[in-house]
Each structure stands twice: as C-alpha cells, then as structure tokens.
Length: 299
Image (cartoon, rainbow, N blue to C red; front, side, top):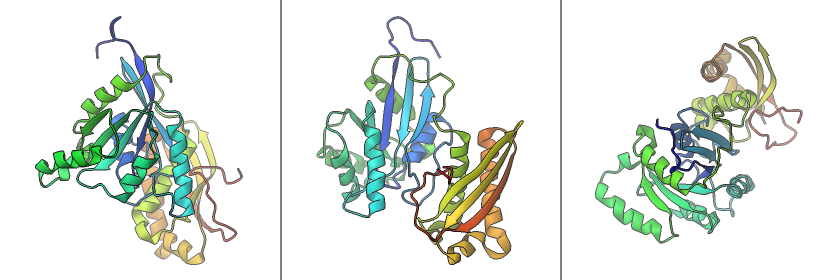
C-alpha cells in the first residue's frame, strides 16, 4: 500500500460498534480487523464487556470497540448493566457504527437509537444484505430508519461474505480526526492472553450447550503460566446448581472433553503455540457473580 504523502494527513480514532443483541457486532469486528478476537454465537448477549480491536494501515488507524448489545433499559438488571458498559464505551469514541439487520428494525433497534449521543457522527451499517429476498426493499428500509436520526453515512454490507467492508472503512476513515496513531502499529487489542483464554472457553460452552446453559454460568481462569511456547491453563466453569454441572460435564465427561478440546485448539491458533488446558466444573451456590470473562476469581 502506498504510504500517505504530505497532502494525505494521517487519521486515527476510536469507533464504537453498537446495536441490539445478536445483530452481528462481533462478527463485524472480526471481519474488519481480520482476526477472530470477539467470540461469536447465536445466543444473545454473548459479548458482556467492551473489546478493542485495532486495524492499522498506512493512512489510518481504526480502533474498533465491540460493545455488549444495547437493550431497553426497562428490562432485567443484567440488561441495564450491559447497557452501562456500552454507553460508557460511547463516551470516548469519535465515530459510531450502528449495526442493524436488513429489513429488520424493531423496538430493540429503536431503543439503541435513543441511547446514541446526538453529537457523535453515526454511520448506519445495514448487515446481512445477502439474505434479502427482494433487493428493492432496501431503499424503503433505509428511508424508514432515516426517520430515527441523521446519519453521517449509510453503508449496506454482508460481514459474512466481506462485501462492502472496504467502502465502510473508507467512510469511517474520513470521519476520524487527523492525528498520529493511538497505538503501536503491531497492536491488535488491549486484552491479554488470559482474557482470551476465558472468552474462547466461554464461546465453546455457548456453542455446544445453547439454551441448556444458563446465563449464570461463568468461566474463571484460575491459573495461566507460560513455559517457553507452552501455555498451561487451569480453568473453572462456575454454575449455580448440581444439575447444571451434570449438563456441562455430560455422560462420562464426554461433553466437557469436547468443549475443552475445541477451546484448546482455538487457543493454540490464537496464541501460535501449544496449550495444556485443564477444565473443571464447580457449583457456586453463594451468589450469582457478574465476573468479567477471564478474570481472576480472587479479584
């Protein structure tokens, strides 16, 4: 890529990716930066904390912030907690990408619109356009969403097939402030390997257990040590009831072994080295904890 000349100022800034739960924010982040950082499942509220993903190019540095799905704040306490996480992320960004599904705009999307600051440039990103049966329905849909607020730009995409991602990046670059990179060019995220170990294990739990797994289930990384290229990781899956423990373990431990193996393989790919992963399931009856994924259980 051609380096920026004197007439091409460098741009950099933080971009929040927002939307209702399960709209595809994490998938979009992963496609934009070209790395599977954010865990993805079909279950709503898979993302529980904001996650930074950095894409550095010669003329611009994009610092994307994947946020928990915004919901109507009148719903459960857990939803309000996730909203606080997402809204706090909006306080320190330069651009907002508001992700909505093509031809689907309901109360959940309207709730997101009400929470977006009026003084930030918002790009409406319409995802899953490849699933539209009638492409002529796209323009009326855009006109409908335009009634909610003014947009800096509107970009239809298909994150699953990487369509229109380059035009989206070009639009975002033009909205970022002119400044030097905020992070070292080699930076991909601000999270450490311990965090991603917990997230990858949690992703496999969601993918293999689906609705069988309650939201009360958490993952704790109890020990993370590196010996040369080998990572030794000891993790716990924390549940509230003995019956939930049996579900996670499965018959003769088969389900837990499959979950741990899938998580280990993804860890080895992300960490670029061998991983020893030991996973236990523990019943924690005292109280439901809102622990950050991958956090140390001792604090």
